[in-house]
Length: 152
Image (cartoon, rainbow, N blue to C red):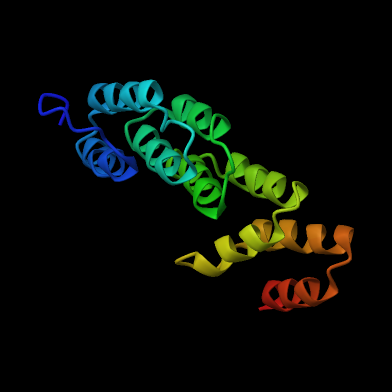
């Protein structure tokens, strides 16, 4: 694209990042990330989630966290990518802690979307974090649903 003088857009970066994480090509992914920063796409939440996933799958959990921290206007996809990165590296405690941070920052709808999109039933630690946050903020309808799910 650069040789042809074509300016990349968000989709231009979202496509090669999953390819880099598939073959664990951290060097190539890092080069793509550098280009994204130079052009101004490094903080886009949609693209950042691809970066987070790429770094996590290539073994760079610290770099994944840095990409998350540099993201502007984080959304449920960004949060999910980072929680999944911790889980991918066997850091269950950090994944749950991060989920709790998401709740503490008032991102209940993101947390609810995350729990609902989980491929497996959430475990006691996730449901406990959700229940605790619901209780703290007085969100009784979600608290009741979390409590029922916790019992089952």
